[in-house]
Image (tube, rainbow, N blue to C red; front, side, top):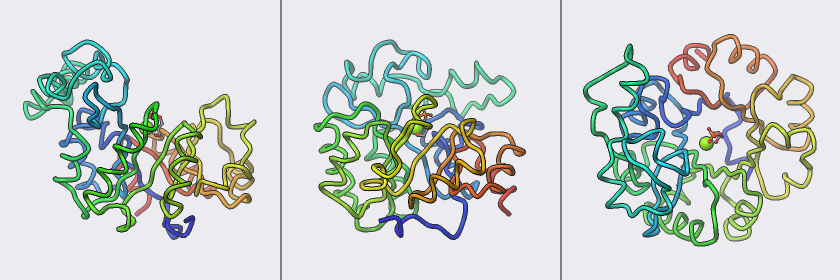
Length: 254
Ligand code: G3P
Ligand code: MG
């Protein structure tokens, strides 16, 4: 399955969509990422109280909507009443756009309805349990995305990734590691179920990237927004970069 990960180029992964330019995890941010030639749309998923999969980073809606509460305590209908764009205009007045006002939290199905097989998806399961994994795989299959090689699945949860690998060993899986885990992780063990790892870029240097790659793993770095950091990582042989500015990375890679 490592072969299913493109290895002829540095992957341009639009972190929460083009989230430096538009409210994260909205259809507008994903559309902008496509227009900026990102290779992948990074989508963070949570499951609602009524078992729907929605694109939002935090477990709580407070930072990116006008609502309150945990995604897992709210139904899709309740989430759909929330404004997931106006916060961006308030936080970044210089980037404010009336088109952002009133945009809603998208479901995974809505994203696939809009972008379908034209896009590639790098999907993170946040705090996944077996029920969420099953719901997720069901939606992927409904939109024929699995056999189309259009999806990379990522998670901090080793349990979730090994569960998925036991069912589908052809999907490229990325084990995400937090800063405190990057040095102690067992990369040989990770290679048994994953095609690569995603690490905070601040933990990386050339030797460490090469050490991990020596275990047959791709190395993807998050979240890189400054051109000089992008250039340094590319020089060190990074395989993919998560960025809020896919336009900036596309310019560096050109
Ligand atoms: O999924 C890669 C990166 O996004 C992990 O960090 O917190 O932005 O989801 P986070
Ligand atoms: Mg993520």
